[in-house]
Length: 255
Image 1 (cartoon, rainbow, N blue to C red):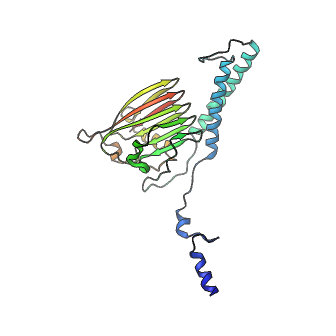
Image 2 (cartoon, rainbow, N blue to C red):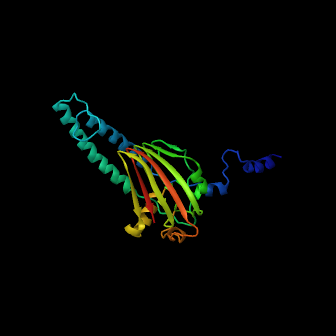
Image 3 (tube, helix red, strand yellow):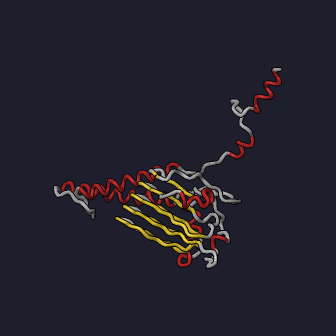
């Protein structure tokens, strides 16, 4: 009887000290560099402090300046902003050149989508994970953080779609395949929108896409055929982007 019990225990999913070999092999290996997230938080705090310093006397432009200023405070805050700007530039370079672990590609893998309101930690959306429901989940809000929207890792069904994005003191990056036709509208206060088109910027835009989405999906070294296919007039894919920007930016990358 005791030997039968001992043989049965490893088969129990809740038994202590027993991990099925299939689950152990399938356990995901995270390559996220947490210190990069901390640097992003530091960079956001520096931006806030620098704008406050301009309000109270530092050299620079801001929509409000305190009329009660003196030469000592203005000099101190200007020096502080100079040091902060240098530190911010170094931080941006560290984030931009952060190393990544090479990963073999068989099929796009993904992370689970995060809630529709992004805090300082950031959020990511992928067409490989959500499918066409990505266009049905409402406005995507970004607050003091970054958001990645991957629309390039899987084919998009023909049709017209609308995607609304709100950004406050943050950034949103959207990645599109070549066949997508899109419109861009909305408002921007102390921010802007940029479009990076592979037709003008060359094939290196795919490598840029791979680097920026490396923590969202694993993409092959060469773009898939569907991603670089031209627009099909008989089966068009049109996306209407509506952006609301306050002290932030939206960048769109199309292959």
